[in-house]
Length: 85
Image (cartoon, rainbow, N blue to C red; front, side, top):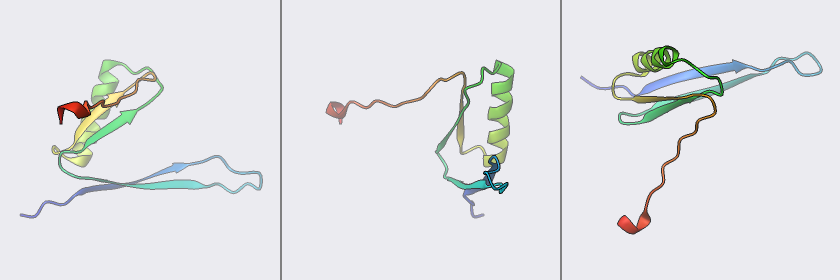
């Protein structure tokens, strides 16, 4: 059985410009086994809402993709000590 990479296309409707034309932003997301999907929002979400978002993303992209939900302006960074390498 061959595994297929998780791939989703997302769209976001933007506000109409001065001439009344509405633009759409489209992005294609390709995830590979072991990737981490980070969902970030400036809203304060409850633990239940975070769990719901994480679980939904896991169902969409599969168990090989880890999901992290950051809320209320939290950010995520990785600092590596190059001396240890």
